Amino acid sequence: TLELMDRHQIQAAITSISSPGVYFGDATASAKLARICNEFSAKLIGEYPDRFGAFAVLPLPDVHAALHEIEYAYDILKLDGFVLMTSYDDIYLGNPRFEEIFQELEKRKAVVFIHPDAPQNAKNIKIGVPDFTLEFIFDTTRTVTSLIVSGTMERYPSIRFILSHAGGTVPFAAWRIARGILAAKGVSPKERISRTEEITSVMQKFYYDTALSAVPNVFRSLQELVETSQILFGSDYPFANEDVTHFTINGINGYEGFTEKDREKIHWKNAAALFPRVQMQR
Image 1 (cartoon, rainbow, N blue to C red):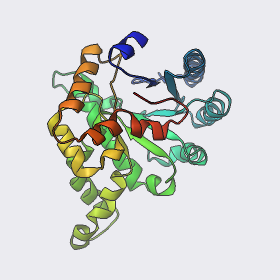
Image 2: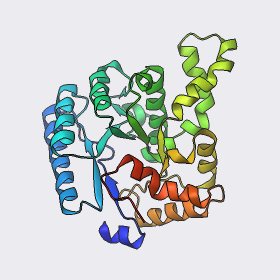
Image 3: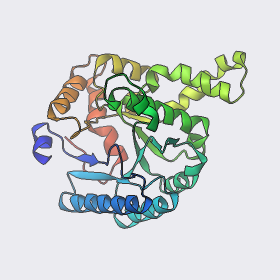
Image 4: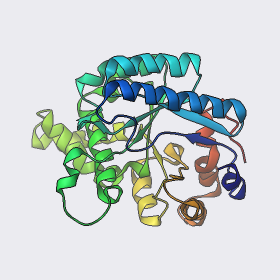
């Protein structure tokens, strides 16, 4: 990993446990696996403090065990934030079941990276492509909608949320999502027109990474929703190989819609503001 980072002039990386996470139906095993992963991350940072940071993984959907791990990972291991899957047992993040989790994350003004997983019923959808092709981006969109319609985003404004893969379909579907949320809240069709911006402004509080998304049509859609200050470099390595890292860097550098100042923000300045412990610099 260090050799790859050096080849691409990547000073530091924030690691995380991706899909499928650490829960496979056994809560006790999940708690043990989360602890192993988080202690490994702390050891990695201890050996290379200027090259690595890490998001702690939580043994959800066991809320009690996850609360215990938040305290240990943040207060003892001093990790840099937390990674959450978009759903656990098809329970999305805005569900009241996770209220205590967000209360604790709010106290710590935590950085929370959200990575998608495929919902359980995805296996019944026979299209012929891997889950990451469609289900990952749709599950990100579902959990974002869940966080907004439930009021979670409003109740916990100090949590900094990062969405992988440029937010799934959120930038493209922002207007439609906003209208649907307003409808769910009982807002009249006429009033929804004037209040759409109210919901899209919440979507603008998320950060969006560039993993598997560094192409012009995605960037254009993302720019319609957020400022460059909300975009972060993401590689999806090692699930995506080194060629994709190279493609992502070239995609950012070659996109005509970004200025040099924009690229500087995306490549490291925005991340440096979120992770001051890690020496984010070129």
